[in-house]
Image (tube, rainbow, N blue to C red; front, side, top):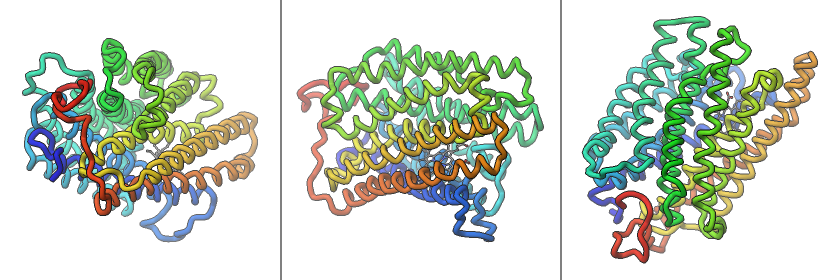
Amino acid sequence: MTRNDSPLVHGAMVRWHLSTAMLWLCISLFAGLLYSLQLLQHWPLPKIEVLSPGRIRMIHTNLIAFGFLTNAFFAMLYWTVPRLTGVRVASRRLGWTILVAWNAIVLATYVGLHLGQAQAVEWGETPVWVDPLVVVGAILVWIQFYTPIVKTKERSLYVSLWYFSAGFVWLGLTYIMGNFIPQYLVAGNAAGPLLGLYIHDLVGLWVTPMGWGMMYFFVPIILRKPIWSHALSLVGFWGLAFFYPLQGVHHFLGSPIPMFAQYSAVISTIAIEIVVTTVIINFFMTWKGSEGSLKRSIPIRWFWVGALNYFITCLQCAFQVTLTFQQVIHFTDWVVGHAHLVMFGVFSFWIFGMIEHLWPKLTGREWWSLKLRSISFWTTAIGLSGMFLTLTAGGLLEGFMSLNLVPRETILEAMRPFWFVRTTMGFAIIAGVGCLATNMVMTVVASRAAHADFEYAPYEEQGEEASVGTI
Ligand code: HEM
């Protein structure tokens, strides 16, 4: 037992959710790499139905969303919510139940997808018989984390808690809307906007509030100074809540969905640009004055590059949401590059920053290898950047060739070098994440140095007061 298995924080839950997150990430990465071989016409497992490429693609995307990101966010919540509220989660036994149930759901999804039981909902391909279990899982999560939020005696809640509180409700509503309404109630063109909204809200109303709340918690703690503007962070919250749910149709621009819906999605996407900028400004203004941290602190390096990637993603959005730009990039690899930049380059990088910060505290041991930490960062960052730049450039080429009515076969031939580089960069990402995972395991089994935990020490043991909540 380490010092962070305190009565307040259930450290074992943080460790287990982080470990399962890394496990699902590794499986998902192999699935992504495998599928990239199909696009190079080198599928290594021909004529095996359960391993057909289409199924492997769905395994790649679903394990990222539900296996990796969601488990990592649960770990983050177990660490942050009790600290911010000063109250324990509802029940340790419920914690174990959620851990087992959630990972059983991910496993069922994995097996169901191999068996060809996918539901026709992009990023919600979880088999229909798994859907009700996800809703039950979400309700258990509400009970676990709303309990401390409701019971807290803190008079004003830190902005991270605002994001978390809303994110729990949004997760439930988003999942029900995307997985049940198009399946049982509406079909065809009418289901289109709901499906667009589902994909968009899974990112915007689950991954984003968890990610923003996580960044707003960890960055001030690591830098040991308060966030630059609390007011700006709240503008971000209300902006997210108001504008995000209006823009799902921007995934289907140019489709038969009525133009008024498409135009409204374009306008609210432009509005959300301003909202997202609040987070980026707040991050960089908080970091300003602590420039040395980029060299000293590997967690800050992950957060910093993640914030930079966020800026690039948002800049891309401002262009790609216009109908003019859509004529070029729709159905091209530009979109795939964009998806990897935001899901991996931003939110996953922030999660890696959190892991870098927390793992020694959770295990009570210093990182096993400093060199491996640095290699992991650089290899992953180079892999992601290379993949993003290649897909973006390839996407533009693809788009302009299509606009000029070049035959599809010629376009596919032209894309081959880009896809080859994407696969190579995939190897780099796997190597980088592999270094992090190896370092995590070796820290537990072989690290000799004990970790001295100053960030979360009681106030009287610290030289200066830390910045967030009741630590
Ligand atoms: C080894 C590294 C990776 C490789 C080789 C890889 C490869 C791929 C491939 C080939 C696709 C399908 C593209 C298509 O259908 O044209 C894809 C889709 C996707 N991947 Fe990855 N991927 C990797 C890592 C990741 C990571 C770490 C994430 C998120 C954290 C991620 C998120 C996604 C998403 C969201 C899509 C769907 C994109 C869309 O439909 O627009 N991938 N990936």
